[in-house]
Amino acid sequence: RFLGKRRNSAARLIEFFAKANALRRIDADWLPRTDVACLCTDGLLLVQQWIEGERLSECRTSDWSPDALRRFVGALVDAVDELHKLDLTHGDLSPKNIIVSLDGAVPRPILVDVVDFTNDEEGTRTPAYCPPEDNDLRTRDRFAVGQIASELAEACSDEETKALFALGISKCAEGAAPWLSLKSLKETIVFRRRRPPNARLELEVEMQRVGFEGAMLSDNGVFHIIKPKKAPNSIEIFGFNQRLIVDFDPADQKPFEAVATKIGMREAAWAQ
Image 1 (tube, rainbow, N blue to C red):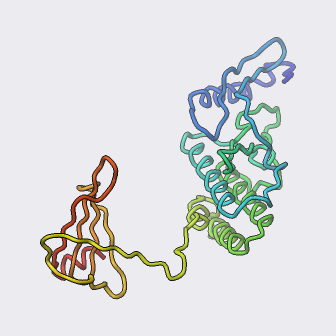
Image 2: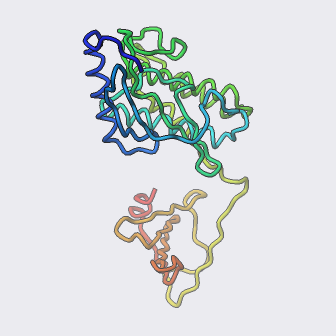
Image 3: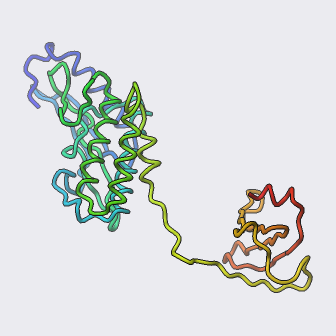
């Protein structure tokens, strides 16, 4: 980029190199590596890792599955949150500044133009992705994520996904101080696998000595399954007043021992 008289851009140059230097120390899959940032003759040179992929603004996101869409926006939320935790901001987040890279068939976002140079005192910005009261760069970044998520949801044909996105975005935008966090958006759209209708787990255990015989009694129609921290290769299944402990071989994760016992109401209540 041509600079002209450097002394007229001294403050902007200091800010640019400080940010470029901070980015050089970051190793993240959502950010291109920064190799070189320096002055050369009358210009400014910035060398970054080449990223394969398309800009989000050029992608046919209507072809994405609801799962891929949720994963993409969830990863975008994580990227912006991590950037902010490093005391950095993007400032001009938009579909043109996001590269879509593919991990197999799953799209993931890579933020580009995180560091840029401009003589404009307000910096580079895309008005459509700036909040009405645009006085904080972190808020601007989070608002942009909400706008991008809204546009992606509009292109999705799945009505449930659209509804979840709308709910998450509205939660982030509500209150006297909106867009202080993207937590509600991510928690709302996180993909939850549904249990198939009439799904059931049938398990038979044979052992020489048992504390009870026959089928385990359920606790009001359900069984509680716990994986103890102190026994990572075991699971405990609790019913109404019974417990089954199954130990697995750490080498192949196949069960090799089981113990069935009666339990008291205190232990049953703890499992809940």
